[in-house]
Structure formats: C-alpha cells, structure tokens
Image (tube, rainbow, N blue to C red; front, top):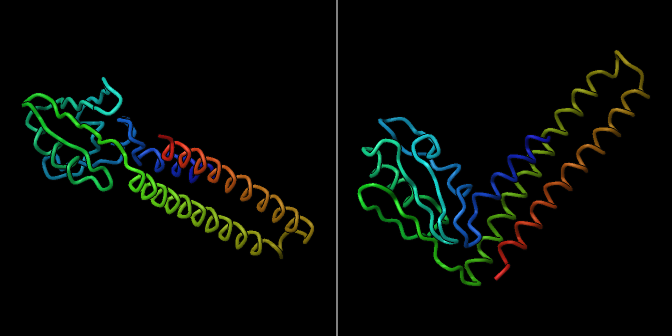
Length: 172
C-alpha cells in the first residue's frame, strides 16, 4: 500500500503547476533506437528560470527524438524548441480554466490510487478468509481490523497528497 501512495505522489508530480520542474518529465519515454527509454536516462534536466526547463541530451543524435517525445506529452501545452545542442521547454502561464482542468486530472489520478488501495485490501481480505480454517476466528478478526486501519491510513495519505497538489495548482 505504501508503494501505491508513493506512485500516486509521483503521478501528481507529473501534472504541471505552471512551474518547470524536472519531475514533470519523469514519465516521458523517448523512442531511442527503437526502444522506449526514460528521458532522465538520455538527458540532463535543469530549470534556470521558473517556467523554463533545459534538456541537455547526452547523445546529440537523440535531440529530435527527445523533442518529439516532449511535444507529444499530454497535458503539457508547452513551447518546445531546440538550438542543435539543447531542448528548451517553456511552460505557459496557467489560466484559471486550465488550472481547473489540471485539478480534475489530479483528482482522477487520486481516485485511481484509491481504487488500487481497495484492490490490495480485497486481496488481503481474501487471503485472511482463506486462513479461517487454520487459525482462530479471533485472529482473523484482528487481522481484518488491522487491514482496515492500514487501508484507512493509506487512503488518508493519498487524500492529503491530493489536497496539497490541488492547493498548488490553484495557487496563482
């Protein structure tokens, strides 16, 4: 469940809040010699200004592929250009409508994380039910209570991360 919460936080980081952040490009896969490769393995990422990110490829021949992958990135709507050496990504100022759209996307990602937590709980509950013949009913009931407490704690962690990200997105 902790891994699911961490994955949700990472997912929230990929939604732009108007600031250029290397975490936005964590999940970008570049078609590098026929295989999808994470951008972080192909280039260095720097943000010299609040809304500008510089992508410096380690291999200059991958420059066009990196630029293409960033342009095709969903929900980014950034200006992307290269000067033959680096790719410069400039994020636009977010309008209020765009911010609200991003909040909807983040809420959807949060709900996906909660569904994943519930699926883990269901699997663990099935495992506990399978143990009923081998251990006492009291032990199974105690295990179910612990499972519910764990699930509630992790769902609250996702909600807290979601609340922080929403506040960050709506901040002008």
